[in-house]
Amino acid sequence: MILGDEQRDILIIGGGTMGLAIAIELALRGARSTVLSRQFREAALHAAAGMLAPQAEGLPAGAMWNLCTASRNLYPSWIDKLEQLTGLDAGYWPCGILAPVTDERQRDRSHPMEPDSRWLDTSELVNYQPGFAESVLGAWWFPQDGQVNTRNLAKVLVSAARILGVEVIEGITVQRFQQTPRGEITALESDRGRWSAGIYILATGAWAQSLLPLPVTPRKGQMLALKPPGQPLLKHVIFGDQLYLVPRRSGKVVVGATSENVGFQEGTTVAGLQALLNRATALIPELASYEVIDTWWGYRPATPDDLPILGQGPAANLYLATGHYRNGILLAPITAKLMANLILHQTGDRHLKAFSWQRFQAPSEARV
Image (cartoon, rainbow, N blue to C red; front, top):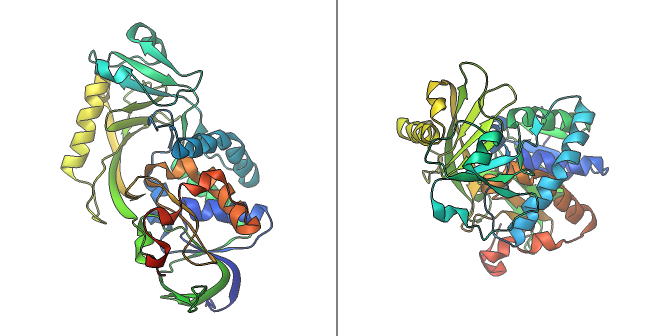
């Protein structure tokens, strides 16, 4: 039986990408934490395609662009550290991303461009990736973007946390915070008792609003996986209009994703999957001969401005790492690094200021 009222150093609520990445980073710096997870399989980590795509997404210049590119640039060393620690393959693949264009107006990009990114006309594009439909006029090539296999990454994160001595407790639903009149959190109440710590970190993704009045809502995404009948066609991630195609080294292709404001409605639908298949085959006709081998769904944690909520929370000993929307996998390394700096050393960062919860409401309006 778990004694929940034992005092911990740090309690992390949420055992998905952010919760585990932060716990691992804290452990590597000598800090002990306990992760409370309701259901690990619910985490967006399991449903995501794993694109590392700040360039392909066309993020505008500013705080989010800086955060995402900084995190993508951390990926090689972050993955190497995790793989060496666990002996497992995380499925990181800096394969580059192609963003095909079917409308001449899409050729003009006002977004930041890295020096080695370039436009490919159809004569060049076929050398990078054959099989595009005749409607494709060319594509933008982003060689620094890539992908990670999220199902592999999930195993690596769990393994790394355990090896480092992180206490990960599954099957706990945190119900509310207890706090002093001055606002400091003294404990958590859960369906398995009371938990207390010196520091609390909220990393519950799409479920954040169940504990705090934060504007984080679920954005459902349906996805499917295809298997080629012969040799794989796709060599790079394809980032299209309301569609992405993510080839794994095994040859499997992940196709995603819908974006639906339907709350926590479960399941895949004919309409959702058909829309994805129509877009995929319109872009690369040969995919029509592929076998559908899997379908699934998940919930992205969305905010009104599609930016994450990071940093100090509305209590002195509460920290927030949620609302990453569709960039959670990409932002894991930088989130873990910045949050560990803030929690252990009270070191702020230029990256964090733009992502404060206070951008949505005055401090006096937020109560735990």
